[in-house]
Length: 533
Ligand code: G4P
Image (tube, rainbow, N blue to C red; front, side):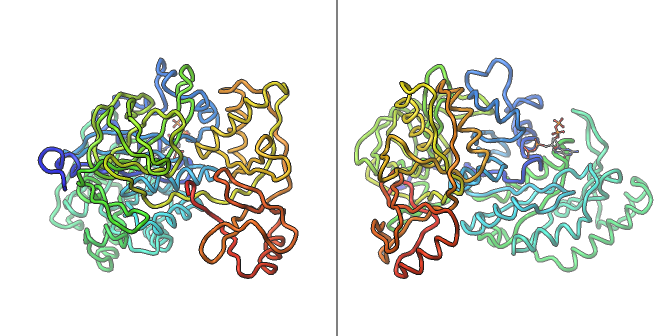
């Protein structure tokens, strides 16, 4: 049965997306401006946390602030053009790529933010690949037009080559950097003049019958008109038209330009987003069924877990992406992996650094539910029956260490803390067959994850710990032809166990892996594995 009436309308107006970019491209600034346009915040700086709301944010966000990077991913909700928009933040730093991957599992579209001077950076390239793999429709926003940058045509070419799909520039820049004069709005046929406006200043908009209409020539310094007309002649001549269907299939990316810092071009992006972004998409279950978002049954999956968001309460929040139906606080759900019923009593939605209790939410929304240890990343829930959505994999770590605590009496506490952090996906743990679970090995993808680990051990658990690096570099999960874990290998390989008891080998170098493969030709050495199976 499908929901109808006001419940169905609520689901139809949901749009859930993430902004992804290389660090420093301006994601926080753009987020802030979008929230400003959505009426959620009234001044710059609120996204990073207001004074007085410290309790609602985690202290380890301090580390994030010190390093100027966004480590945590939060969810922000605002209304615009009659839509309810859920914006999921992603960490820009490569060491947290798994976090970003998980967020991309929970959205229906993404906006790729690019710095006009830097173009497509390494990190951006990888993120595009994930979007392409998941066939997520992608918007592109080229930022910092008020700074000197690359030639717009060259940049367009760069983005298209990286995306391996064409872009459709909805706007086009008129000059860049010190000669930045504004944008041409290709759909509305308007010249939007940039005037380094301050808050509240009006923008001057000149309607034109054609971009080469000389009515705006005198409004810009010499040469800029001719250059913009020349560029527009080129793109109008060769670019395909924008079919929404092609965008939704991930075949064309609508592209806009602007300066997030100067709040210029952000309103155009938001307008295009609201016109084009896909609504809540059906989700595939592991047995291949598609669940309609309007399905009366409430279903969802956990894509993120965060412990100690509020240190006073030592709480742990499981972030649920709702896939279908309606969520009501206090409702009972079936937890598929544990095959048991759970009441979702405490639930929150997050706005900037603050959280609010939520009584109702719909497919497309993200709710944070208080968790007493029932949930793991990738868990699925349903109100009427057991549903299991597609997997959220974990990836092979590349750096390994052990942890010791100075006070031997606190060893158990340290072990518990490590398990908490591994459940969050902040680290991975591997059990040595000789030393056992009391002394697990820790694996991470990037250096910064170790730094966060040490910081959180001290800050959240009050543990004075030392990290001992191990010379390991490679982790692989040996699987047989049926995809099952293999616990015996030819050659003398130690078989470790991950936290869901799957066999894994940890090696010092790629060469060892080649040897393992030669000795065991029928075995697949997987670089990623399910988190929950
Ligand atoms: P991130 O979240 O992607 O890491 O980037 P963030 O928004 O923190 O922006 C990184 C820097 O780029 C900031 O400068 C920000 O002000 C600047 N920035 C963002 N958008 C624009 C833009 O459109 N034009 C210009 N000129 N700069 C932009 P900062 O010096 O690190 O901080 P602040 O002192 O400016 O706040």
